Length: 143
Image 1: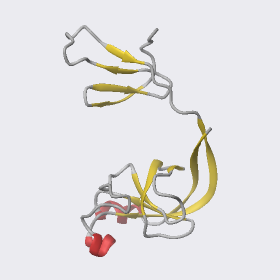
Image 2: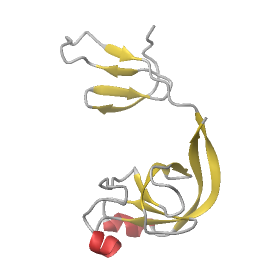
Image 3: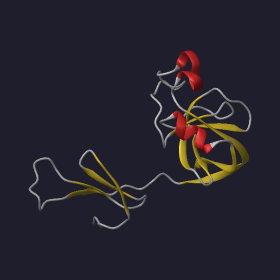
């Protein structure tokens, strides 16, 4: 039985995406406005593992931040996106991390070493406003 519960967190490609453990609600293409299709989705089981405190800096895709790689894709081959992309040389590409006070990100780029994370921002001025920070970082590990 499908339940329409959970906190709505976004609307993507005709689907309302609910929080983990709640169903995804999509309007079927051939449906009338009263018909709703639901699918139960359970997030993979896992937990956050603390990695300690990291230095945080911020970068954009400009020539000043990225040099000859400006305007191009990240080391993962994906174009960087604010709210998703971080650079970190000490964690594998594709690693899901949680940065205290910042949110969840995916390691998609390189360029920094050790306990240092460079968070992608859409503009250079936004990077300058953020400055240099320090925060606790956690890695998602599936059970």
